[in-house]
Image 1: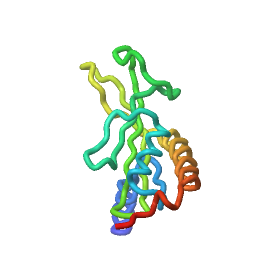
Image 2: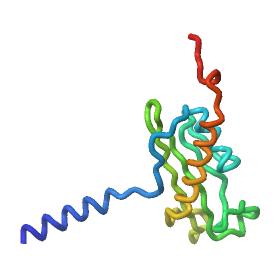
Image 3: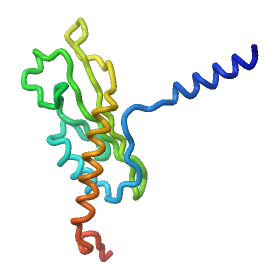
Length: 144
């Protein structure tokens, strides 16, 4: 009996600690350069946090196209990217969230799309590596 209870407790702890989305580990660029690369991949940004480390994409549909008539849409997707860490190398958390209309006409978070997050993270990883390869040594040099 106690063994079953212990196994159930451990299972609940492990299931409850799952995170959504994808995490890129140890990215080579600084915060401002990383932000520029993120914006080049996701396009126009809807919202940026005060410290510039949290970015929200514009809303798009299931196929990835921008939503033109928001009042007609029944569901919408958006990307949420966070630059994590206090110094280089930074980690980047990539999450794609799905919202649906509720009965009052407002929006309610209903799901996370890990497949779209993985595709976006792959594009971002390629862009970060390409940006790193094209960077000049002089651009990273600070005299003071």
